[in-house]
Image (cartoon, rainbow, N blue to C red; front, side, top):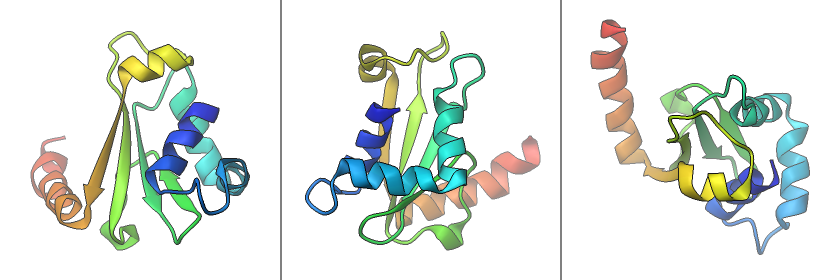
Length: 123
């Protein structure tokens, strides 16, 4: 879990502000964030994608489902497990099989529109 939280903290530039440890405590104090991260790290039935939306200077929302456009301010991150063999919780596995993508609002709006208008009706 520490590696995942560190990636989230680095993505929203927490290092110089409150520190990764303080950020981790604040992030995991919110039940929805803790549940999303734990689900992502669960090897037997993992969530394959985490959406991370910065909230202010030193906090973020972590979601398992595609966020609604209203929650999105400037940028967000998507953490994706790209392994076909499930998730192993170790540093080497994460380095090889975890992809982190940064989205700006414009890209996010396009993806949101595409998903809602094209993909959702098909599913």
